[in-house]
Every structure is written in C-alpha cells, then in structure tokens.
Length: 204
Image (cartoon, rainbow, N blue to C red; front, side):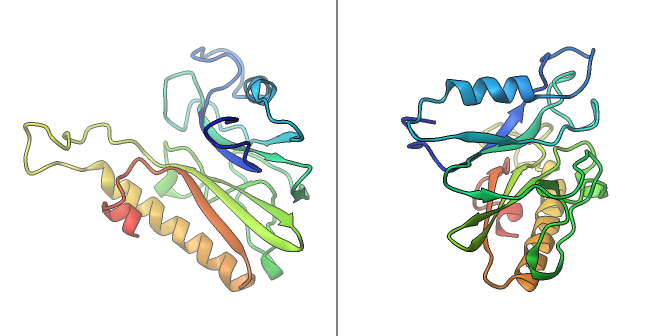
C-alpha cells in the first residue's frame, strides 16, 4: 500500500475475512481484521478510516467459515464522507434525487438472485473539492468449475461466466441510475472481477 500504490486516498479491499478467520463460531464482524490492516500502513499525513458492512453468516462464498467480503478504507483528511441510513447485509442502497445514496456506505442489489452466494458489492459516496465521487468495490464469482485457459479441454468451458455477466449487467444498471440522478458524478468501479479484459462480463 505504501510502496506499490503510493498511499492512495481510497483503497478497495477484497477477500477480507471475519475476525476469527476460518472458524464457524461467532459472527461475521471484521473490524479487528481491518484495523490491523490500517495500523500496518506506513503513510505520513494519512488518516485512514474504514467502511465495511458485515455479510450474513456463511452465505456469500469464499473459504468456509471465513465470511469474506469487500470493504474500503479512505483518507478522512482528504475526502469528505457523510454516513447515512442504517447499514445491513440485506439493506439495499437506493439512489435518491441529486445522486444522494440512501445508505452510505451501502450494498448494491444484495437481494437480487444474480448476487446469490456471491460477495455483495459495496458503494460509498465521497466529497472532494465540491464534487461527488462514487466508489464501487466488487468481487465477482470465481472461475471454479471452468476449464483452464491453456488446459487440455477445448473448446474452453466457461460456465461461471454467465453469472458474472448477470452481475455486470446489474452493476451497469446501478451506475446508469447514478448518472441519471447526478450527471456530473465521478464514478470508479473497481475490485476483483475474476475475468480477463476480453471476456464478455468485462465488455458488458
């Protein structure tokens, strides 16, 4: 984070496990984990703050018991952030008049079938020099079950791609809604898409 990324103002995190790792006991909270990440960052002048919404227990894939999720950290010295609404694993974020998010941070379409057994995307709205910046962090479903790019099975089987395509369409819908409500919005869609740039979900 310090050397390779140059102490960014906003950082998307993927595969953040809960506080007790691969253990089915307890809850899905991850604040201890995220606080350890922030404490390990050596960036002068930065005051990193975390944004995280705990997933429903054992429902979003990844290593069993790990309750992985996406999250983000940001420099509160550089960016304005206003928390809104009540955050929850199944609370759906709506885009209100002017591009205001009903929950900030919030989860995007957490109850849609496309996101079933998959990490839910998180969005946050920031203010920077009077402009609204929206950051969406994703972790689309993996390629488990697909044949290898350079393996013995040809033509290549990409069954998992259909699900990623559905996720991409939903993400497009949400970004389009922001642009309609706030034509001047600055939007970054980042994270682990589990896809090569030339694959259908990325083109979508």
